[in-house]
Length: 338
Image (cartoon, rainbow, N blue to C red; front, side):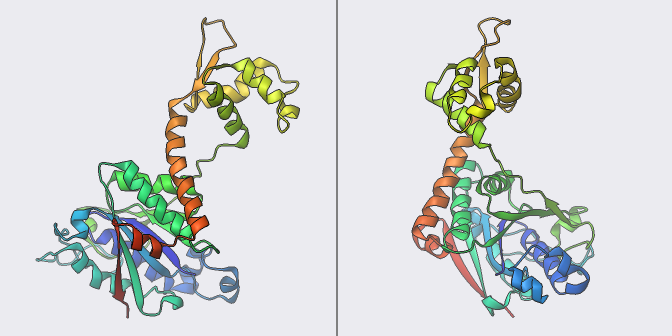
């Protein structure tokens, strides 16, 4: 099993080809560096045999309609020596697809897993740079199709946050946190403006930046508290405690808990996170009235989108191939690798 890379893309081809060139360098230097870097990739039996794992299975690029349709040219770039900054700036430019194809072929060919032979597939996904919800919905459907659509083992998904704008990259990170299906998040950094134009990695040591995949997890207990508040809309702290004391699952935790301890240990953290609001008639009133907070409404909105996408892909076996056939915002490109 190879790795499925989801990448934001603006007008710089190096945002895509730079990371691929870096990965290819490690992949082809397996014993010295690649084995450790790709240690969590692939299947256990592959790792036990010492076979190289972590080859690129698929590229999914999130960008604008103008870039996909070739209405704008990409930025001029520098085909730099590997691991170095510098080189000649390309004097002519062209559409992103025309510029990117030969550059991607050159690098992807060095890190292709055996199962894809010589055909590389790129999916181009149209996003809205000023509409994070639409962008997130599309990313959620792609993630769901890769994670659940096969009906078997989910794909290994990595996310590249280098290219594109804040909307794309925020939506990618949000999808990683809410889906629980993303193995790795990363970006690559440029030392200066010249490095930003380079299409190959510019430094083997200070180029790749790994970010933690932080699950946006809410415990079952906190979910129960939020559900109690949601049902009542407005409810006293003491009533929430009473509900939990009568709950089959939680009564043993709360049966001897005093109201003040319950507020300090369970309600105050939810209030700090903006998941609930607590309203007091008087400053001395400990038994405040709880309502849902703005952050809970925001989280629930995005969580619902991801949950529905994952459920639909799982139940209907919706693969990314199916997605491309039924959605107008995603298109497929085949390239011949060496």
